Length: 264
Ligand code: PEP
Ligand code: MN
Image 1 (tube, rainbow, N blue to C red):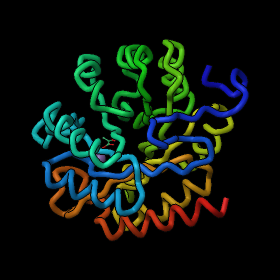
Image 2: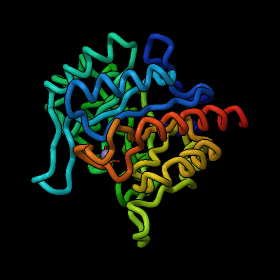
Image 3: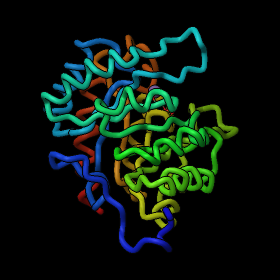
Image 4: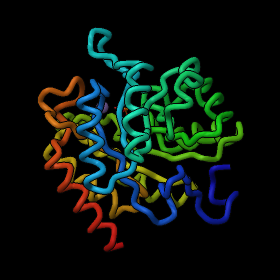
């Protein structure tokens, strides 16, 4: 069902208020790895609004490798974020980690993100297939393109066609970068499916200075959107500071993304 053999034309996802993913737009989704407090959220929203970015990312339920690391503010953090984002006309994308969270998050989310550690959580995918809300599925840490497509198929087959795919880097033998963003996956996914394809250069390379070139490469390869991490003080971020842009770097990236997308 997610194959281009099944559907003529490309899927685009209308989040309302003029925010559309796919359909020739380059969607920029930016924000911290984790939502930390009200001040941080407001400062991020101000930064996004100033730069014309309409979708904010951020984690409230964080899948951390260590159980002792910061695991997010949870549902109360999401409600606080929602109140501030709604006032500013900003849409929210955030990770849902388990089935029981779907209902409590539902009213405060515009796009449910399925993280790389949950790409093959088939029960979660089944349930997200039943909701009337957009879903972005990240490629698994060691997942093949085919496995990502089967994961998308779970959601689509259960009835939810508002789906976005995300290349976020895979684990390879290379240790010079956190992951290896598979630029190849972008044209392949766009050839195989009718779904919008987004790239995550932050997790894809994991090194702040190199987020921009990787993001630009993904756009040139045909990505419909870029999702990346930004924070007013990356050194103090509760998670993933090493790959997080400060607002100045983020502004530069946004400007270059906009310029690059007009070249296509
Ligand atoms: C994230 O987006 O912060 C995240 C945890 O990503 P991933 O699931 O790709 O590791
Ligand atoms: Mn992160």
